[in-house]
Length: 199
Image (cartoon, rainbow, N blue to C red; front, side, top):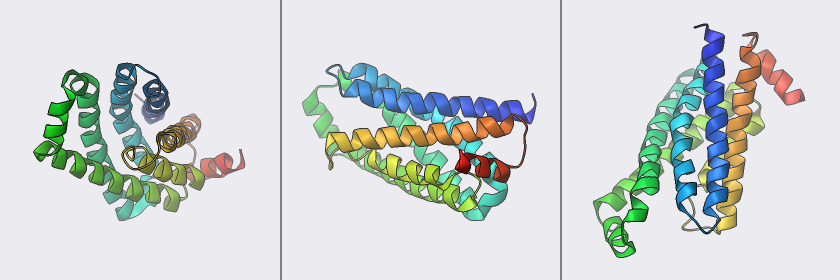
């Protein structure tokens, strides 16, 4: 398989992840929570492929800091995938009192640690997207702001989380679109960034 095809498959994974993020939040705002949780579980699975693709696309310009940010982002997103699987297929089957008891023990600590690693990865990786100049900087800022707001449901209004989900999903779709267009001719990522900034 040609490299261009691999990049395009990675971009498709990004499009699926972006759609799952936005649709999942929309469904969870409705009365039935379960479909939204399932969509939420799909998003990070395809998101892992998208993050790898974004990093490979900007690797030459991201430097060592970008590589480190990618590793933290990948680990954090993998942990989130596990949490979202729990949310989609296990949490809703557990009585609320038992959920509360679990969150007060080691599982609660694991949840907080996973969220912290994810947030550090988001900021670090998003900063590498901004600094590299390969992608439009606004997409990088949207990635950071959107994904920082997504897990903040306990401390901010629900509409803020919804806005964060939309911004996060759109930023992933934007990054994926840049790769999709660039993979068509495998031209210079910097040339494509100039095109994306002007479009």
